[in-house]
View 1 (spheres, each protein chain N blue to C red):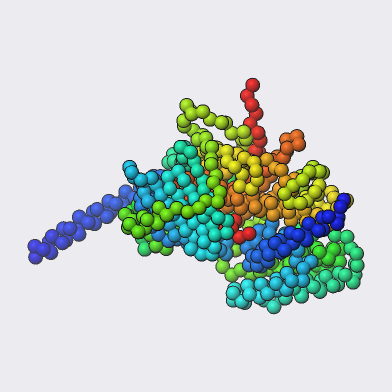
View 2: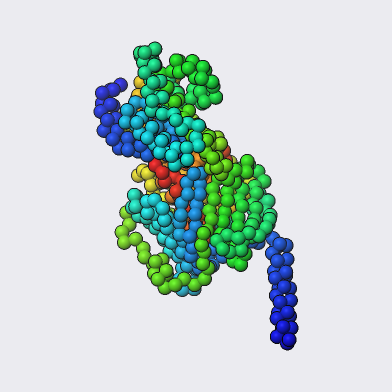
Length: 335
Length: 241
């Protein structure tokens, strides 16, 4: 009898706890959830498999992520499980992309690591409507469904399923302004917590040979004013509201002998890059292409006898990318 | 203009280009091709027996995989292309080539009668292109799942007007002083073949650039952002060359 009483009391306490938790969640700010999503995807260790669908294509990928620690830097390994073997290994300031067809590309960021502020509560709400719409289940885990709807037509909208406990992204659906689904990413299995030793060993297995190393000279756009910096030589004449320059860098071109100016912009949700490269092929064409979430626009900028390829790539609608691309111009040197 | 020199270098690059085309063909009949890719396939399909046969095979394979629910299940596009070309040869033995891109969009809206009229006014390369285009559109629209309709319903990417190029100077692609462009009117002095060749070079260069920059963008947007899985998953988009 006494035991029964104890159980009912415990049950009651549990109910209070759960309802309190529920209340806290529904009333909590959707913006806070998004911030938490960004931070926990760095501060938690996890491993899992997910599918990525774009148009008629479906790909399976796996991810292992090691959280940042006092001793170890953040590490990540993303493997494409279908088709030609491809793999991304990220370890601190280094990033390797190995492809069966194209060899190994290594990106090296000197001491500076560009950090793109993925989401800042209070700023992004000016350009997106955020709504918590319900509770769902993804990959066997309880998930909070969040709507991120753009307030103008310059960006895409998202439906995000975040893990209820950790706010990790479990599922993401990208929709255009007609409400059509453009891409889908969804975990099929996810384990959060300490990684086993043999999984950790996988993270340390870097490619034995590197075919192409890309040394980046990077300028953070915001902080580090004391550091000597080379200002970018190109700028955009038009940007959709809310997009700010996050980082600019000069890197060797992947397709020619020249250096490329690379600028990256973000509004906290969407990101796009602008690349400007001198042309020496004299085979010029302007093109735009949209595959899944990525829009790519190539324009030609002419200055005297010199031609430049301006390329805009990012998860923004094609029309936005077009408009940005035509506005790109050299920075006027201040007298 | 040294046409002989050009045709020799064109032959040299044909074999590798052909392999690429086969892949693009498969993709375009799956309804996944971009405008750029579609254009390249269309340009070549009319001129190559092997590719025409392949197009037929790919289409059949595709239909089977999709469960035969396409209205075009029984259309043999290779035959369609061939008859169209044969008719054209009888009617207009040495017709001048016109740009087929704008017309093909008109064709898909028109009736059978209208199509005949338009065909009669086009060169044979354009006919081949428009047939291929119509069939590809058909396959795309018959896609059963609403989610997968996205590609078909999206506005096709636009290919813009050419920029005038310098007349001299050497380059990596072996095209000397050829102006790349789409509008035949601007380029009276060069043959449609040269134009198409220059176009295919320019398209390939653009494609390479998009592909390479997609990786650079993924790297830029993933570093430190915490959303790297999405950035890198998107790389598959520009992977199918």
